[in-house]
Length: 172
Image 1 (cartoon, rainbow, N blue to C red):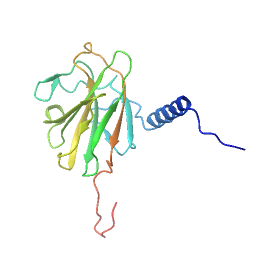
Image 2 (image 1 turned 120 degrees about the horizontal axis):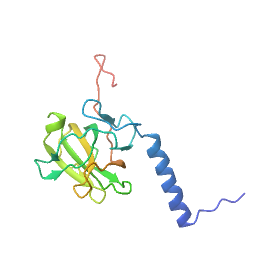
Image 3 (image 1 turned 180 degrees about the vertical axis):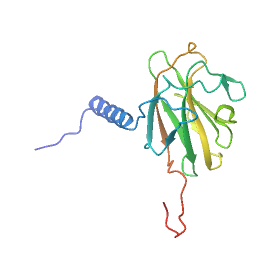
């Protein structure tokens, strides 16, 4: 039996199908909130979900610069030195998602903004100190009030999380 390399269009379609299946496998079933955030990377290297059914965390993000017209998906992440960017992949019809990275030492609903991104602009993590952060997925200000939808995120680099050292010296 001779194996052939798939045609470029077929290869691209297979790649997208594989990505979609990975995203669905890592997808939480309900929108996450400040009191019950998704934990990334605890759910895998890719993350997908929906803002539909989520809480409306704040009327705006980043010191009032970015309006927040709909419900949000809240993620708690630990950044280390090896992650370089967080990329927002797509959205659904009628929902143009944006993401906001905020200081994890602050309260979820009033955290200080440290990064903004959308499907064309990843959040660059260079220069952001290691530690815990909030990541909010929201509808862009151009969306209608109450707009919600699905999204996917990917990390460029390792979001391996906080390294736990036990009393016996072994890593957790």
